[in-house]
Length: 452
Image 1 (cartoon, rainbow, N blue to C red):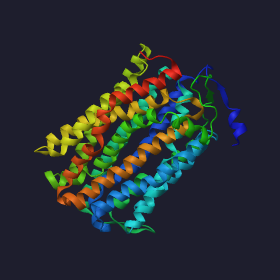
Image 2 (spheres, helix red, strand yellow):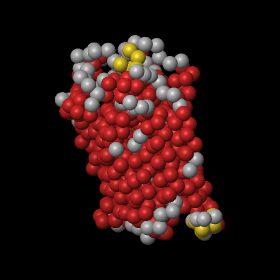
Image 3 (cartoon, rainbow, N blue to C red):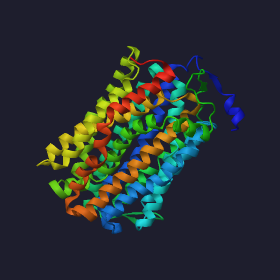
């Protein structure tokens, strides 16, 4: 699709939005896709023990697989894919990405050593890099600004549903693995249950790829001129826009970066830590965590969407950012103290609060970003957002925990490595919160006028 044909699909900023039934239908489809992507991404953390045993790898190597391998293309492809999303048919870009990550997930189950699995996770990251720029660009064109928080919260709630599904599927696979050492399949031969799990969750995603290939997309909206509007939509324009406001965006993005560092770094090691410290079988942890995620996660995302829109309509224009700050101040201390508790249930209780904080930040973060982002560069800004939080989360999170476990505390003290992570990365941004908010409000004022 040419740039000219893409431009022909634009409408003025004040044009009527698509019918609600179509817009919400798009949200539900994007949410299902996000669920598939998160399951494909997160399920490896629950399978840490059988993977380590079969492939003969350490905590440190596992950290590089779930961190560096996934992030290499997931992050570095974000900018060119954001550029593509701003110019080409977004549903086709997304269809290609879904197909790539689904096949790569299935191939993960065929890995025979560290490098095989590393390369397969590269493919998962490359495919998933298409999702967020395309999704949030389409959401921005399907809903008006004052009604955007709810659909974004519903979409990002897929993290909860995906995390729960990943837990239950992994728990089932780990339970089966105790009874069956392997299962024979035609052409593939004997496969351990963890390998079958990757294949089973990966291949169904190809159905979604076909759906998106034939799905129409909402027309792009051209924002009215504003004093702080970007001059063009090239990558250079986007980088210049951010560079001129580097303090604002660096401060804002640091809060979400800490969230992803904790989410990726801690979550991937919790099953192993609960087994080594508290004696919980990984399958039991998976079932408990799957249930816990649903209980606290869905209400969290729905409440963030409701209160963000409600307060925004009442004139509190920075409502999403206020929610984000609340989530941050809840997330950091609970992340530090959870794995220092004397028993497993107290630890998991603090983790439930930690998940609330992470959920609030996840749901409010992208809404907060869109409030300080001109429409011309929305796809690229979302890509930059995910580039930053993914590189920091995936590289610093699992890598730090794995290295601290293997080289500092000893792998029998994995819980200490997990507890140290939020202390290393989370305290300084917490101290700087007043400065970060002041810069954020100044940028909002340039785009929208004074905030309440």
